[in-house]
Image (tube, rainbow, N blue to C red):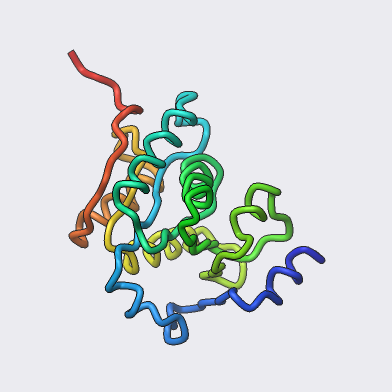
Length: 178
């Protein structure tokens, strides 16, 4: 519990409930390239973490975004956030709700970056709201998707597509049909 309190006392934390974004100055950020990240957890990455990080790093160098929105989940989110941090790209860490424990990699990523909590407490809907928030405030999406039309990555990618966001896909997880 003490760690959570320390995080909530930081000045770069925004707690957003019911999508009241007034204090975030997001309209100014929309003038620049802001990326959102969506992708699978480790189980669906098929051992391609190093390849995904290399791909993400190349995309980040090529696109040179002003910032990235990161959902901070294990797997794709943390892989791409690590690449962004190594390139000194600002990260907006978007959590669905505050947690009692933050993994050391999360703490390292959060260091000197903005942190946003979408909900005050756990709810299944909080994950969807977090993803919707990131897509709504990004210009483009880096997506690591295996092509299976189910799960959070699919829902987030589909939402981005329906909202005319540029989607940059990593195709290495998809099965090639012959």
